[in-house]
Length: 218
Image 1 (cartoon, rainbow, N blue to C red):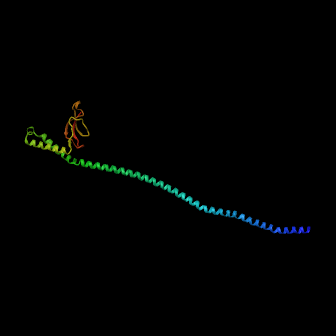
Image 2 (cartoon, helix red, strand yellow):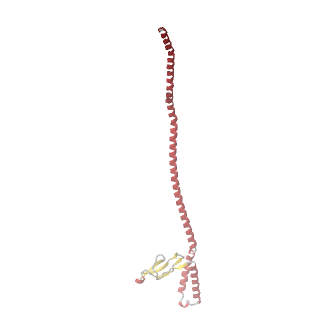
Image 3 (cartoon, one colour):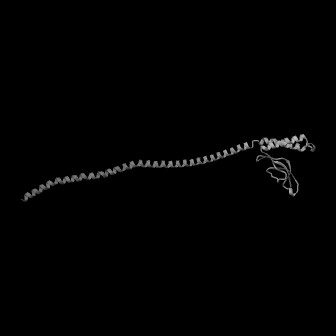
């Protein structure tokens, strides 16, 4: 009986041995399987780093280009502001030029007859001197009356064009419209006053055409 039991145990041990070997083989097979992902991960890390390097370089290049564009944009804005300022100055200069041109044109039109009237002043002077030089007995004659009438007509015509005599005798001396040719002691009451007119002065409209030549009291 004991002999049979021993044989039976031996058979069980013999039968379990292949199973143990199979377990060991499975364990040995599983161990490399677990090590493979770790090895693959270690192999993939340099690849990922290698792939990330170009991306980083591209990002840095884009950042540099963006910074360059910002700098260029700032420069363009500054240039635009300078051009705008220059345009405003040019526009202001042009407006001033137009205003000056308009005023000059108006002055040319307004004072167009000034040169002609200035050339006629010696004629007035000579006619006035001729009238003053007539003897008293001839001043009432027909000739003197005719000359006097022509002189008054000439004065009236020139006045219609804007010619006006400058008041001189008895007026305070004004260097803007009087030219002092002589000075004479005339007493304290006439000091600084025009005491004699040597040559008539004239305005053409509101512009001095010829200053009056005068004698001033001192």
